[in-house]
Length: 437
Image (cartoon, rainbow, N blue to C red; front, side, top):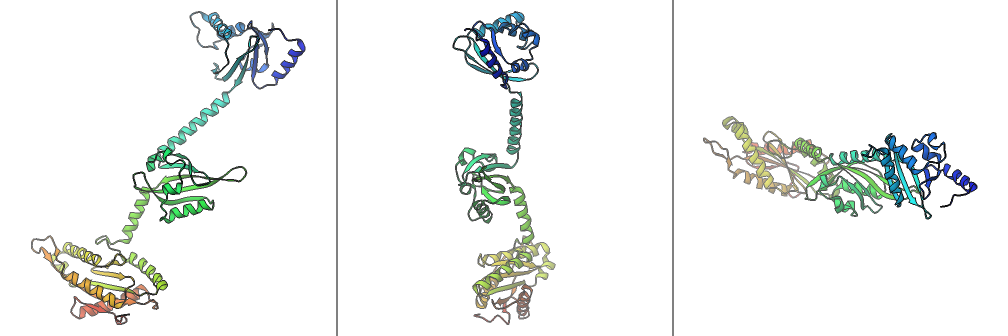
């Protein structure tokens, strides 16, 4: 390889001195013919090494070996290491590798042979890039660990609502991420009968943010799971809608605990019937329904006869057994749309939806007969069984009547007391509840 003229060399030197990487060029005799200042700076070569002109490859290799650039000496010492470097260079092939210097700097070294012999090398300091990559890797690892060890999974969808990314879903719903990628989120997780799911779908349809909406999903095994969904629509730099990015948190335990507390608040602990609060809530809904469809609503007040005598004679445990038996009889002889509640003590209320006074009287009579023929197992040797009766007061509320629940119960209560005074174990209608209404 001939030596370039001075003008060419000066032009080349000016160009490579502006490059951010270190540049070297060696001829076929392994003599350096070109290098820039960045090369000397990156590898901390002293000016003295270049005082007599550009060094040879062996001069550089020997200097590096003596200062520990290649690690510990082999058996032959630094001279042997320098010889090995020169020998490898004679079979130069295109290459890319990374080398960490003793000071911690990481260099990417790219080399390629030249057509007339010799080679060119480019040295790039990638320390910051490698540190950033390592920091990013640690952050990703931490995020993955946080997701995989918490009741959370993250997801992304495209503009059509198909999953494009999932992480952490398997340990919550049992689906492998590959099973759901490309499938619609609404089809895999949403039950269209669930209002919360509908609200999520509606918000995604109009591209609104979603914040902690609670939805019910199904695991791969079919079990019910409650999720708290939060998500944001994603747009590209041009404002084009790309899809959604969100996070779902498993809130099954807290949801079930809340549901249990709500049930406790609405159910009678002894009979598991609706309590007064639940009955009042249902009454309000039924009155609204009455106003829409124009059908009557009938209430039946049931009071167990001589219940105090049962408690005084056989104790409160037997009294509780009797109340449970009454509850079972009432529930088993009305429709599923009707509501039976324990209103206190030995008093029960039955709400008959869309039933007029005649129908209410027939149902009350059916309940009365069923109760008087029921044999109750007390579990007592002295009194293994009991039979009890009850008095029934029936009142019907017409859609045109504007009465509070208390007023309606008072009307049924009057009818029930009429049954008591008439000899008990009978059904009486409130005066305003004419049969056939």
